[in-house]
Amino acid sequence: MYFQQFYLACLSHASYMLGSEGVACVVDPQRDVGIYLDEARAHGLKVEHIIETHLHADFVSGHRELAERTGAKIYLGALAGATFPHIPVRDCDEIRFGRVILRFLETPGHTVESVSIAVTDLDRGDKPFAVLTGDTLFIGDVGRPDLAPNLTPQDLAGMLFDSLHNKLLPLGDDVEVYPAHGAGSLCGKQMRPERQSTIGKERALNYALRPRTKEEFVRLLTADLPERPSYFALDAELNRAGVPAVAELPPLKLLDAGEFAALQQAAAIVLDTRPTREFCAGHIPGAVHIALSGQYASWAATLLGLDHDILLIAEDQETLEESRLRLARVGIERVTGALRDGMAGWAAAQRPMAQIGHVSAEELAKLRDEVQILDVRRQAEWDEGHIDGASLVPLHQLSSRLGEFDPSRPVAVHCKGGYRSAIACSLVQRAGFEQVMNLTGGFDAWRACGLPEVSTGVQSSN
Image (cartoon, rainbow, N blue to C red; front, side):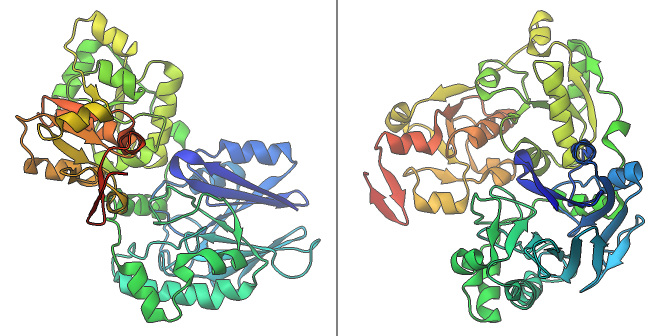
């Protein structure tokens, strides 16, 4: 049996290909499906089956394109209400090919239509050796229970408890666990960095499997739920219908500085994907900065949404194409164009430029009473330690809360290491704050310098 995990780090997304005797099945494909076609060809396999464990909310799936290019059938939980051609599956339905048996388990809780797939390789034995759990069971966590519009998180959490304890845990401690996401995904809270596990290991280490009663589990899972990004519902609907192939997107138009400026003036959002140091040294006034090096697409969808015209800035054509592809993976398709020759073209046209300053941890410690310090980390990070006098404004809430601060006073922004705070600095400056500084190295640098911090209400000097 052939078995391969494909991990897309920028979305913390895992998809899978299983094959036997010339036939392959792809589970939870990413939007750009060429990797599966290439892999199948390299191993003498033909993709005949495509499985979606549920209607994904954090990325756009390539199931429709993959089916069109291969003739494969798509399988999805019967309660999904999908409008594309597919086979609705229920508990104990099976797909058999070669020496492989895939048995569906209905495991609602993350979504009502969620399914897991128990995988049997007859060359290993007649019992499942692995289970593909989608967003039901993660490594160190379980799926968030707040993605059904007609059910409460408590309703879904109760379903999830039953799915875990009645369907997955009884498979046996030796059964390998392969989820659809890893650490960094917005679909869970406390995922570990491993990309596979076992039922036994999760039973021992996963915090969400410790409660003994359904009531305890529901309370645990629904307390302090992170805010659900607004684009989740839109992506789920895109996946319910199926999206066109990436190749059908119109060519990326290169714009000279004048055309670019005119479109920005007409309300298009300038998205600068360059490294942070380059952005801070000089950028187009009003640009939003999200470096391509991190969780670029997730933050773009969270902060910008799917319904704005986007203008891209990068320094070469390859990076532009990669930037656009990553946006398409989360459903952002309204990319109006890109700046020809990047910032060099803008400078050659003698257009205005803006800058963002940097401040070291030691310098910020001296300026602490003179500046507004914005901490854009998550609540849990703040609780573990923060700068006394700082204000917690998680990045996804920043734009809606800038009215709480004085635009005439200097602002210093930090996160853990600098990626999120660089994004935040661009948003703060875009909102009209003129004196904006990014803490170099973030809170990690502050702590490394042994500077005082506050943790859980107790001041510490390290």
